[in-house]
Image (cartoon, rainbow, N blue to C red):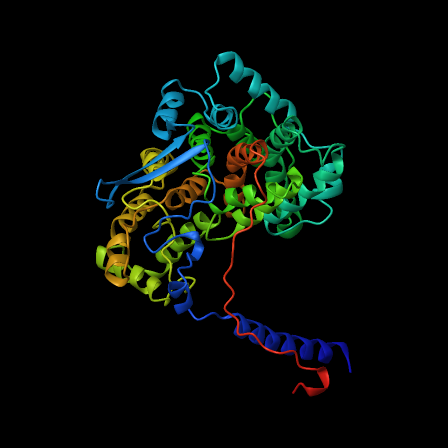
Length: 456
């Protein structure tokens, strides 16, 4: 039998086995209600199962009345007890970047004074480098089309460069996390530049970071051929990093940080696992989907009147257009109902950037989708709470206007979320809790073992 024939038979058999595996794992949906199982660790009203305690951040989307009923409110997000709106207003009004200050707050519990902030920025600047020949030996050795894959394997490889990789003392974990936070922009941008060189035959450009510049500025500096960027561009990218830095502790990737940290494993394994979670389109990859959805709409609609846009959104829900998954990306959130405070904040800056970058027509389309999508979803589906735009609805649009390629949208999220992951990893280790092990109810029918000779 020749190789091609053997390969075709193997592929056919794998397809058959895949169907068998799928069929053997389908669980009757009625069991979930009958046994009161919280799918996705959330009840029918979207309330999350309490799996731990945290002082790092808090999400509020409702007021619980005296009679036990819930009244939805505009979403609120707190970092260490301080509302995100106040944090953003503080550094924007004082005309400085806020990501490093925000990370300090999340990790150490208090806003830094001027001396502490300068020292912390200097530490990150010092760590903003990769081991000697790492780009040549690791990044360039096997280019990948997916930058989240680049980040995961790069982080795991950095384990081998650390003489104290398995030391989970707080001092060592802090050092490791700060190094990874500083290195993440380099790993992301360099991985992208290598990908463009090997796959698209473009010139290979590797700019060194500026230790004195902030995280947002360095992303733009290393990404662009001329290393040039405007103050508005760096300010808005920095704002996106602040808004993505942390989110309530219960999000998928941060919960992953807690779960993996609770096992006592090393920092590199923990961060790689969290990156794997964030890579998913239901989590960190959603903003890429929003941009692609809008582009598909622009390609396929003859006009952008309300009726046309509404019909297209209904077709999305009916799984007739776009990726046929039935999801209007960027709309709705597991916790927020009336509004996502991060989306509200970023929206204030989007119009200004759209004017500067000549994306005003696109901005109007985004606004129209934001207005019509909740109505369409309410008409089509039974919903238990309100639906509004989430932060992903606008963040991808912002990255697109800044010239960030889609391949770097989720890595930008990861760069920001390192702040929250760092704080939560330290919190999990500091409280020395038990290994996290949720229960699963078994619903399989008990059977007797059948000898091989008696099996059909």
